[in-house]
Length: 296
Image (cartoon, rainbow, N blue to C red; front, side):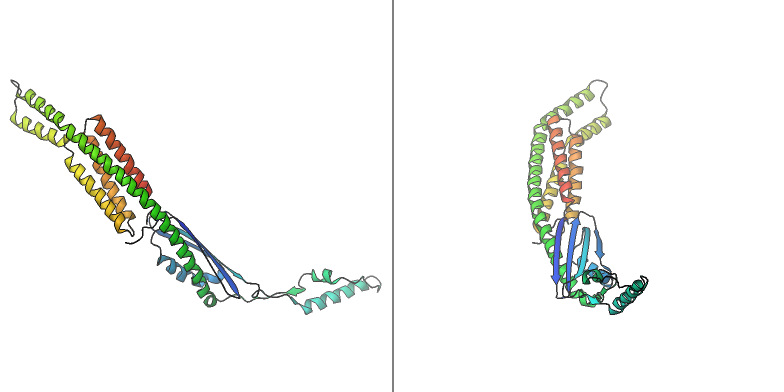
């Protein structure tokens, strides 16, 4: 049986070499389709299509945001190097400054003061090439996707427990509706007899109208078909939970049909107990619809 996944999750992944360190953060929330947004550093722009393909091969629904950071390790970072050309120019200018004081010597500058002068030291590190970063980034991305899917799997399992409890509650409500409908059948039959007697009074008999009234009363009061269909939908709902996989859309369709059937039951009945029970069932269906919006 395939796992049932929630669309809510978070995952992070890291990978490192002696030169670079990569960190990937992924977040996912509800979404009808896969809506992917990736933020990458400039050095990864050429890799972005490949990274998108990687995510799309693992996720099918949800609004997913990702952030991929690349930084140099201490070994990669360029060490400071004295810029002798700049230093010599500083000394030349300092000599000129001394001459402005009638040839007097300036107080010698400390090494610390010299080191603070702009441009005295330089540090050059070449930009990383995307082909060198690709294995590292993909490793970190796969780790983040694994963690994201693990969280989605846990959230999905928790949701399934709640869904099973709620569908059990719906079955109980439908059993009650069926019992109430059976109890009220005698009342419905009596209403039908009263209607027929009224039509059979002198001057009130009309064969066509009599047949029509009988059919209408029977159809308006009988909810047997609606109960049977509703129970069929609950069975299919449980079967979908048992089969697993991407079932969000399937469950949403079944709940729409359940809502339609219970609405019809409520409209056909004139008994308050049955109507109130049907309202309880509709509320439970709505709670189920809210829950499954988070399923892939």
